[in-house]
Image 1 (cartoon, rainbow, N blue to C red):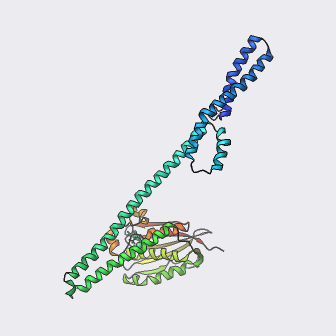
Image 2: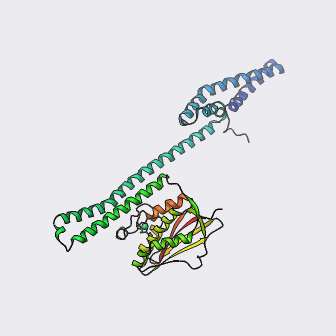
Image 3: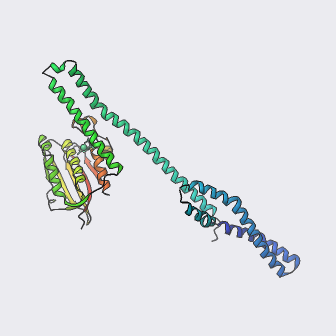
Length: 349
Ligand SMILES: Nc1ncnc2c1ncn2[C@@H]1O[C@H](COP(=O)(O)OP(=O)(O)O)[C@@H](O)[C@H]1O
Ligand SMILES: [Mg+2]
């Protein structure tokens, strides 16, 4: 079918010219009874009206549209712009121009939305940050003031108060180092140094590093039966070590006393490996499950603070795994246990 919606200015001029010149030339033929006169009238009329209409369209409508384009595509290279205005724009129908403008408006809307979200994000982050720092700072201040006010001379409490103050200093140090890490990860200035390595060896190293924490709660670390067969992955070993430390540390903190923490390794397909750290602890309720990867998100603030958490661990893990182009996810049942798993590329030759 003939589509009148997508007519370019040239076609539109031609069509209108035809509509005008056909009746005129027929009338001319009827009056003069001369077929040649009719044809000449048709040709002259057609060319004349076509040129006239095109001129009108060009100078009164398309020139204005060009201005609009110039305005909305301010950032385009000028050479390309020139080409665009000269050759492409005149071939576009008004409808296509409308689509272009709509697309532009949509893009701007998304941009504004993004900026607005960033702004909320930034505000929330600052709020969280000051909140996180406030508690240890005020606690330290409390202990120091009490010590200065006389407790220093009281051997029954002085050491205890200093130890408590020191614990809070440590919390702030952890917070700062986690923050430092997360900002570096977010700025993307940390390159990945990928290499092939045996994932089970790294898991064992991490178990070794955290063994004191495990024995303090009488927990057992192990690699799942059937997952011992050596599997090589291709990733940044140091960063993956950081991820594993965070996950095993969480499992140790939120796992059951006397419980067991099990690491499993599966080859999901030819190119991917899935690593999971599971515990049999308190678990995470469904409504928190997706949010635990957010910065500072904790299912139970009091508890997490007591066990020395900054609330940044899982969000650091997520950053690292996503930088590898992989995914991390959590499965959990309250009072049964939690499994946090992530994928990695398998060995590259
Ligand atoms: N293995 C787990 N079992 C139960 N809850 C967990 C587990 N791992 C993480 N969580 C929950 O997710 C929250 C976020 O974890 P994370 O970012 O590592 O912060 P942190 O360990 O500093 O509290 C924790 O505060 C806790 O509520
Ligand atoms: Mg943690």
